[in-house]
Image 1: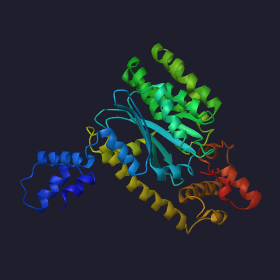
Image 2: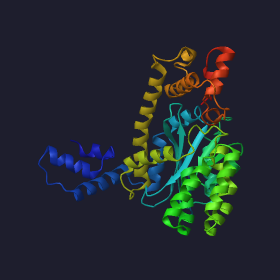
Image 3: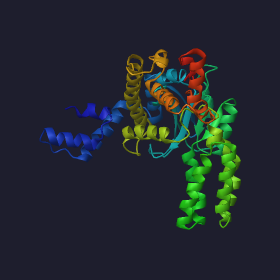
Image 4: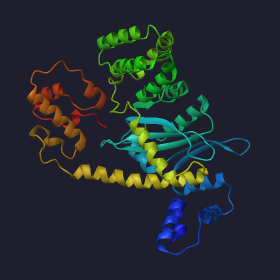
Length: 394
């Protein structure tokens, strides 16, 4: 077993030690392995400083990258993107999710993770950027770097991130034509942080349910009714009422269902997709006390594996056929994802079992780009089939 090879493959020293104990008699201990790992790092750098070595790695792997360095020689901003995912995002460019994660390197810089989405619903890591401090100037710099990755006019139509004013301002400056939405989960965290203290436990649980109903309101009338209820429930908790009136409700168009579904967010108003992308990357980083050059090599390993999985899934989606697809959907086979065909099949069955449907809210088409039961009925009456042109182009 080649210890050097395992270390270069980013295997944790504890796992290497377990393998050594399992396959041979050895007096090696964990301190020896960490010392050997440090020796390999120095050897690999070949006399270069950490920053010089990092830039060399980015160039050798053909990653798109840019950085800002302080006059003291320390890095303050680092932006990097995998070339294959840049190409993919210029095809699947409609929605971008952006969220920060922490404790990924020894300097404790926030890592902003930019995530795209394929037609099969898989997420992919479009770009990473480390910044020393979160402020307007550095956000604008990073979004300008992101903008240069896109081939005009293929810029993101919808950008979803947390409710950070500096982020919102930067997006509006760099991507003025893009729709900006907040993750609903981040809003819920903000509500808990600022309002929970005003309530008794039983009242708070009831209040949270009322807030969820308000956020998920599907019409202006439903929103007004739910708002009236939540104001009534918070009348004895004036601090909470004042907070949501001043800090959340003025921004309702950025995260409430009634407004959010007017734009094709493709099912991304929650933060679960970007959180799962964080989790995947952190599996390869292993610990938070690493140099940026080591973290980058972890990124590369994670993304190379993920890229193969995406190509496999997308390729499978092109060649696999649903044998039980209904006749009106035969033209969709191998042109849109199996996931979307299954959704539209479900809506078609609903149409068969409930011929007298309520008024169409257009939620599915506006938010997901998939025809609703009403639209299926209209298309079948008009042309007799459903084609790929009837779906969102993503």
